[in-house]
Length: 162
Image (cartoon, rainbow, N blue to C red; front, side):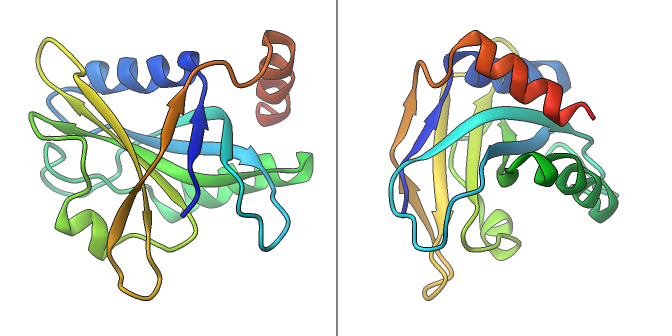
């Protein structure tokens, strides 16, 4: 399990997305450099990209990112050496922990960031990885703070906007 570094700006953008979509769940992509196989150090999220909650049903308790949106995001980022390293979503009026539904639909290797959101606040944010053997989520360390300078962030955004 790899700890996650997330810039304060990205964390705030996730929180803002959660507040904007409340009382429904929001979702999006976590972008990082493509790591060589076997990398065990921290995963540094250099950008987040909001996605549409495409769940066909009650979006207050579920989210889905449509396959075509995932594929389009992968195609945007991969040529630049960046990959979708995980996903974020909100839990309206619930803790910042993955649900049983989240666990049943998760993939190993990816990082999952969950933010708790209420009508007036985003009180907690957490990061998790799915253990491939046990098929259970494990909380991983989440460091929110400086990750990349403003120029690096702008360069990453420009690459993703292609």
